[in-house]
Image (cartoon, rainbow, N blue to C red; front, top):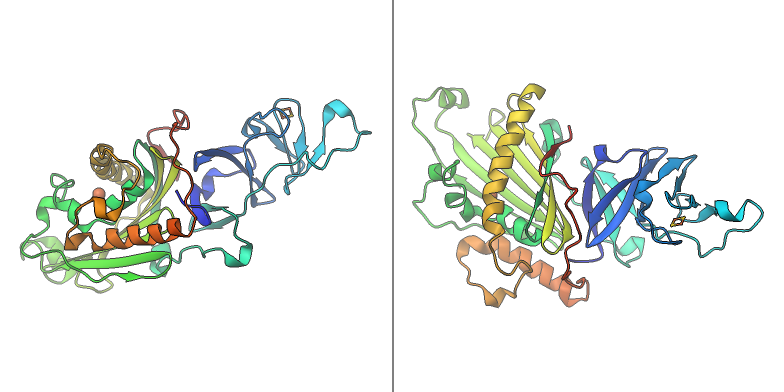
Length: 349
Ligand code: FES
Ligand SMILES: [Fe+2]
């Protein structure tokens, strides 16, 4: 895991004016809204360490569930009930706060020690995504978040992992090769398969001929991937899907994948349940295999073998290595952070 990045850590809709615990980076944070703005603290009271997420928010302060100390949005304790109002609150009675931003339906938490002006930017996703119909859901995965991200930026895995669901339709008549466009925090690549399917289908009539399938895969450090799938002739009739995933690293072996599924066809909310179910099945096809990788924490590039189709994954690993080399790596977690209360699959709008 890397420090000094903005982590997409929760859906915006899941953070309200009631405290919510968020597990990430082998730690527990508490998030809530005060006058609409999201506040993030370490979920540990400085008195005896109780989880503030079990407390309540009132008059702009979060109240610890144990002895009722209350803390304002900058983390300073303003009241210790056992001392009464006469005794001044010691300045040390304060909570560690964390910068947060809200964008693209997610809360982004900055974890690190860089001053505000030196922090990496939030990603910029393609603008058209915001015009598509979104569906969100999340699931707990017993695998390392970076290993799960690798599967989502892997053009070649669909022909094997997803063979039964859709991979058998991908033609294998030439090697998978593509250029990668990268910057300091992200990279993108795309592959197009031309003239798929039979010429007689109704869908092909609608699309104006045998469609091309273009898959555009991106990653955004530290924990987001985006898959854009376009079926058609490269015009505004194309059927488009987007799968944006924030892989929230709970610990080195446990990840909560917070997924937003976009589509421009049949944007009826009544179909959302079906879309979630289909996506869950596809995600499970990945997870089932990724969980079997013995070294869940990424080995050195030279310790594994690679082919041309792995170019985007290699870019991902090299960029991560660059930040580890400059001292942004966090210690691997040896003990799991207990995570049983995360549901296996929860829809959230
Ligand atoms: S543990 Fe929080 S007030 Fe005592
Ligand atoms: Fe996959």
